[in-house]
Image (cartoon, rainbow, N blue to C red):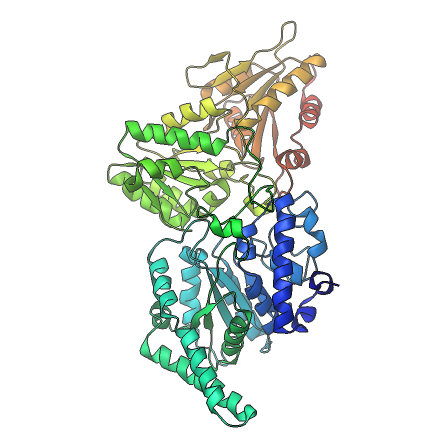
Length: 634
């Protein structure tokens, strides 16, 4: 029996010797490569935390001790250890194993939110709760990457944690999983400071000193005691000398750096943190994404941070069968930047994923990666705009939520011309509830003066991006889907205010339904029109292009029909359909509106088509909803 088969709980793991753990680590890495190569997922981050995860579960006792994994995309090894290895064939599939921690899967999982930098705040709150409830024998361990530490909320939490002078001290350990990267290499002053700590190798030197003392001392029992006392004194001396910089300045105890792939060293560091007389304590571990898998280690771009289906031997992925939305945007913004030297781009640790690689190659001085700091990115964009430039802030739609206040109060209130490009908008698929980009239209429509475009194809993406960056006195947004761009869908005509009529009412039928198609669902909208025609119901289709605010021409067309149906892949509550309903009500129109959007809730993981099916956005389901709501002819 392999250790893969015999280890199904932290207790099983703690029963292994270090030598057996080494064999188990090799088995886990091989199994991860074999499995994730078939399902896709976050391969590199998990290959990099095998020994660290083992050490956490051997030194601490989950679930009584709470282990928090910031972002959570490195939770696969944690899932192996906690008995979920056999479900990995279903990873990120509909109804299968989540790619992030999931409370529904295990009592060992706590935080499901896959947005970075929040683990320290959770840890602070849980540790305080333990103290108030007098659960003084329970530890909280937050594992946070150097990339996540660039997020402002992490430093807000550190500021609070460092000020804690409660007695007895709260049992809180912060493990920095330092691999020099988030999705891309970590940037900023923190990265430079961690570089200096990596170079110091202070903890390893201290351990060597302790081993020497161990060899020089008398009887084994006394020797171990003497060596441990010496290591503790050495740590206190390091703190007194101020050798760990900003962590000392915050008043946080620091142990490190330690080789995160040396399980014995990590266990010693964690045990020492538990034994420290006052907390909280930072344990700084050095790991490498993709560790143990040659193709990942050799990948300089992202070390296989996230992969699709790949060849497990070579690491090569299947060639793409089409052009992606991200690639289309990357080409378009680069072309615009050639024409306008005031165009600059900002990203939050996601330069390649949002399509800015080509832009950076041509204009390295006009692109700014601020780390995982969306709030700073947007407020800084306001300053860039005030300084005479036109910033284009490029984010995944799900992360726009994090900078809403800056968009509202720093950009919109001040009338700054800033363009936001939201990749992976709408239903995104296998990354699950917190990665679907379904809230942006509902959130952003309340921002005064903001205009939002949702292109239906690549040609409209280029058009609408050019129109967006031409606005110099208000925020503009261009949102598009994940995956490949479909075929071009040409318009029959364009209204004076920019809406595209895609199809008129079929000959011989009356103007029953106006279908308002938002974004990449235009092909489904046209299919619904055909299905309605088969039932003798006349429908026309319009793409507003600029979906918010709803163009006046679309409101007029709606009043020329008996019913309007808005198809959108954002939440119905406060979406484009809701906005159209409000506008029609303000005009005292009696035309009803069917809001065919995403239900007000958290969507599951699955393929994009599976999740759209779950949300009721199939052609059949939408056709039936329209027919059920269509008023009878009088």
